[in-house]
Length: 137
Image (tube, rainbow, N blue to C red):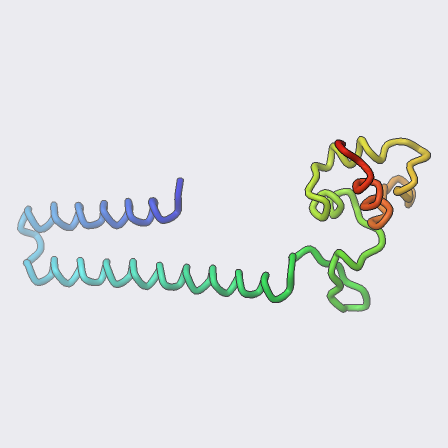
C-alpha cells in the first residue's frame, strides 16, 4: 500500500474516532479542536521530515553517483573503476539478471571470466566489449 495513503487513512480514522468521542460528550469542543489541530500539525511535520529525507538521499546519490562501491585500504572506490566484478555487481552494473550473466559465463573457455576457486569473477572491460558486439543476449 502507498505510504502516503496509509498515513492519510490513519489520520482520517483518528479524526473519525475523535468525532465519535466528541458526540458521546466525552470531549469538549475546545479539547476536540486542540486534538484535531495537533493531529494536523503532527501529520504536516512528518510529511516535512519525509521530504527532507528524500531530498537528502537524492542529493547524496547525485553527488556520489551510484551507490555500488567497494573498499581498498579503507578508501571508497566506485564500481566502474573495479577490474573484476562479482556476479551480483555485474548484474547491477550491466542492468542484467544474475541468471543471464551465469548463463553467459558458464563456458570454461569464456574470455571474460576468471575463477577464484569456485568464485566466478567477471572481467568488467572485456564483458562490456562482448556486450557491445552483441545484438541480443
